[in-house]
Length: 120
Image (cartoon, rainbow, N blue to C red):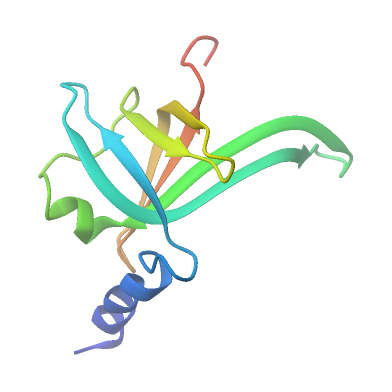
């Protein structure tokens, strides 16, 4: 096993371990099919502008192991797909995929999410 294969294999611990940093979420395609995944969820409410000053905003992302989704479907996430997340308080939100970024070196997929697609 080479280093890339070893790193991809380690994603099962880094992204998908429910006892450390893994979070469950559901990815839904345009036809409504659902895929249960584990990964890391990022929900940052304040960002910095070009000069370093904090601005109120919200950046929500999920990162997951590409091979885990590939085991469930041959499709690749696209703009308009949905992600269902449950926050730590138990509130469930349905968000829309705005952008899909694949790091094929390590096998990580990252989705940037929004509450709606209007205004994008």
